[in-house]
Image (cartoon, rainbow, N blue to C red; front, side):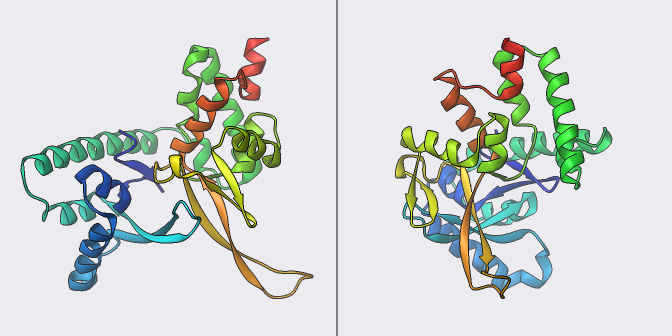
Length: 247
């Protein structure tokens, strides 16, 4: 379900990469279709499509698009055939379920990921995790990790395990998940295009001077965070909160 539709900024969305994979199309052709829609009706469709980037197996930034339900509907109109109809129905169900979850969140209390202040967000997150661990079996711990949507840095994930980002990168490198390319960590081809990561460009400067360049910062999706949890759990490496419960 989460591979088809994810939540971003309290909105159910999918990506051109995911559409290409599900419908068995080349990504460049899906991009072409999206661009045609924007070119033809860009002034009418509003924020149905949002241009973004992802990193290929060589660490190169490539174009992609996020789209909401309406954007997907416009795009999928042109995809015909029995299989296409099957995939459309799966997407409709996925959007319906995700939108129901979003409504439940909006109607309830303010979850940690919705709090802007980083200190208060961390405190709230700890409260949520402690409450969850008391109510759920340890084997279901990773489900709680999936409740916090959005991209996360390696540092943020590493803190869950009581590690530094450097240490977690070493652990992932030892398991042949990532490798160093210049100043950037990138995924091995085996894990590329699985929706585990995205790259966000950031400018840097020296000695307080104006920005002198741009680097790409590796960030993990919630699917990627679960992947890391499952990978490390195989070797008995667990998040700090879970370790406390195991004592």
